Image (tube, rainbow, N blue to C red; front, side, top):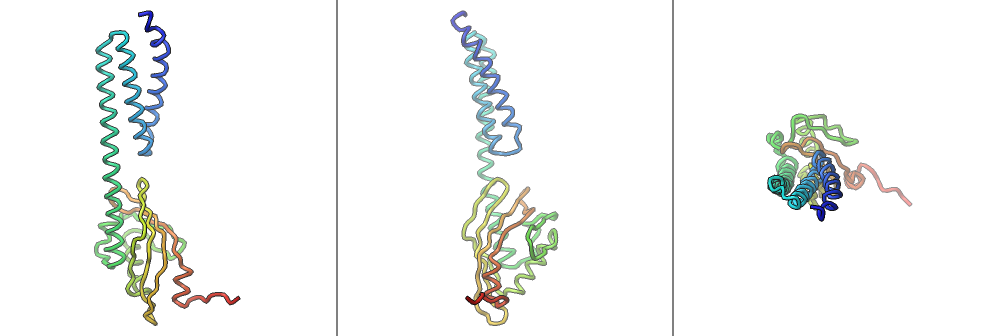
Length: 217
């Protein structure tokens, strides 16, 4: 017993620190930090099992090994859900851009956008909710016939999807093809888009529409 006293004396405090740290991480509202918490919990429980093994407290060894298994299982399941969620969010955004914006089917807006949807753009004023989205879809297709959005790049970060778009259409008077880029950030909750914000290359669009002229040098 005396041979293990040093391990017990200092090991218990190390396990205590790891356990508190693990609990703090698991309690986070951020998914990636919570995942780290599961791993830290597994480490603290496995360390506890080793400590109790030294003093022949096998019931506590078994209890800690079970908790280690539960923590690792929780990590793997949450990691799997995270991957599936990212794929689902990407699919939702891709379909929304195709069906709503490129095809202009406003009858399906509620499939992709939440009723409490809000847009955060300096202009134009979308309004809010399903009606706001529908109104803008009709407006852009009126101002730019043949309006379509093509994805150039798409990234997922937590509950947000970032998209680099090539927006194109035809000049309403000359029928000349016009295109410009847009960066859009969409926030999703429970499979619906709840917020959208971004930045468009409006200078290129207005220049091609003839609404502004390039300054003369």
